[in-house]
Every structure is written in C-alpha cells, then in structure tokens.
Length: 266
Image (cartoon, rainbow, N blue to C red; front, side, top):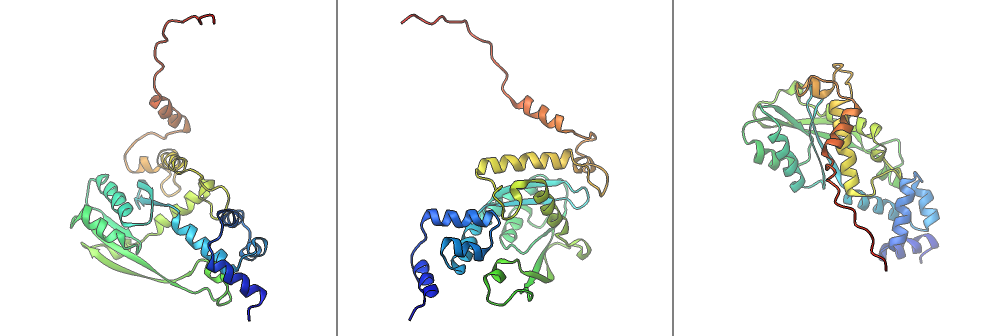
C-alpha cells in the first residue's frame, strides 16, 4: 500500500516532468532555495530535485583554462563540453602558444591523455594529479543534502604520463586558485545564483573580456606585475582605457555618406 509521499514519488519518477515544472525547480535552485523547500513548493520528491540538478549540471558547458605557474598568465582558455573533442581543441591551442618544452600538470580528466599525446607527443614532461574523494561524515548518510554537497578531498595521487616531470612542481593549485578568482570577479560564474549566463555567446564574450583584463590590467600580488608583463609579452601596464581602444580599433570605419535623396511626394 502506498502512502501519499511514496505515491507522489512514484508518479513523478514514472513520468517526465513538464518543462514549466523543471524550469521552476532550476530557477529556485539558482535563487538559493533549499532542496527541501523546492520539494514542498513544487510538490515533487527530494530525489526528483536532486536528479534534475545532476542532469542540468551535466548539460552545462565548462570553462577550460591553462595557467603558467611562474607568471600566472592564462595561456589559453576554451568553453565547451567536458568531452574528448573539447579537450583536443583546448590542448591543441595550448601547444600552439608554447615556444619551449614545458612541464604540464592536469587533473584526472581522462580525455587529457589522448589530447596531450596528439599535440605534444614526446616533447613534454607531463604528470596527472588525481584527487581522491571521500564522504562528508558531517551530513547524514542517505540524505539528498549529502549527495548535493561537494565530496571531501581525502588525498591525492600522481601519475607520470610522459617525460620526466618534477614531483615538486606537479600541482594544480594555481589553476584551482584562479578558478576562485574567476568566480569572485564575474558574477555569472557564482554558484547557484540567477546571474548565470543566459546566452552562450554572451558567456564567451564575458570570459574573453575577463581574460584580457586579468592578463594585461590586473596586478598580481605574487610578483607585483600583470601576468603579461611577467611573461615578457608586454612592458606596459595596461588600463581599462586600453581595452576600450581595442574595441574602437576593431569597429568598422564609417564610410562616406552618399548624396541626400529627397523623398518623393506620394
């Protein structure tokens, strides 16, 4: 015999939620509502809310970045799915922007393996740093909140993939710290808010503007220079006005106006 709660769960799980209902749930998630509150207001189960969150997160695009540990320069960035084609595109662009052999550290995302092999071959010292995650014991086992909360990092392991990477420099800490900088600098990157990008093109444009500002305008506390200055790309401290000048230089020049034509009387 089904009680009211279990009957509701069964109906929801057997039938696909209407588009309007799914939009309502995602909107409430982005507005900061708790999963239990969403379950009550939308009259769905906690598991339904949790599954929709996972599905939506899997369908969203990722921002890929490569950062130089010394200068803190963002060498390359890309926006796309978390899949092999995007990894290949991203690593190809990274390799094209490097003049010398480097040591590369990536996280444990497996598409990196083939992409690095394709575009660097043996001309790289490459290590992969894999994080080991464990359960958050502070949250009750089996609760949706436990599944929703990020897992705790309980350790790491490194794997030499190619060349002779120095274990002392095998780290993804700079990339992870920069991810925080992005979230603090761009409202659209803040987790679980309604400030997320609504258009893919606008998202890419916002990132392009941010990376120019980060590389050429923002002074880094580590070396009191902009990353572009520290990398030797420029010896000038840029200002936002310089970015405006780039915009103006890219705008089409106004053409010569043709002769004025009088409107014919009807």
